Image 1 (cartoon, rainbow, N blue to C red):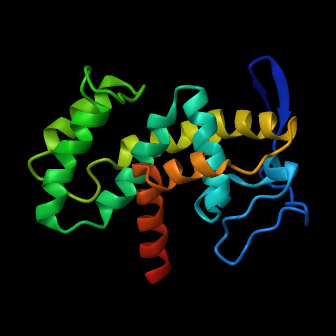
Image 2 (cartoon, rainbow, N blue to C red; image 1 turned 45 degrees about the horizontal axis):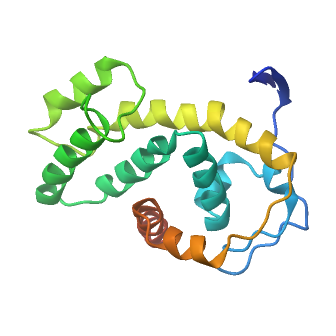
Length: 184
């Protein structure tokens, strides 16, 4: 399909094959090509380096809370009942309160629905909000990221920034989710 992103026509890149010169190591951590823009959205959760590049793009566009929320909810789903109640309150306070540092740009109905379910804190409490955020990531931010990446060369992360990225909560959550999914 085609879609307009900030005034530019963008053809769907999701279905295109990734060029052979995009090489991953066994851990999926190496990005060596300017063809990263051709990777399908689903590859974000298979290739750590692609996720890092996308996360950096989201930071630059001041929308990193979307990816942080999505990954935090994935972690939340794996928690036991007692830990889930505490994490539900933490997620609500981090992403849904008006004064939150990382407030999501979602309709108020999501926050209301979640606030009513905090006491129960079932696994699907954040499901609707997560689906909405995933749509924004996949159909709004990722095409723009692909367009930007296809117009510039991908450079390897600098060692100092790589070390700070490794300690980030977003990447910790990513590592946790990938580990759990591989165990299933």
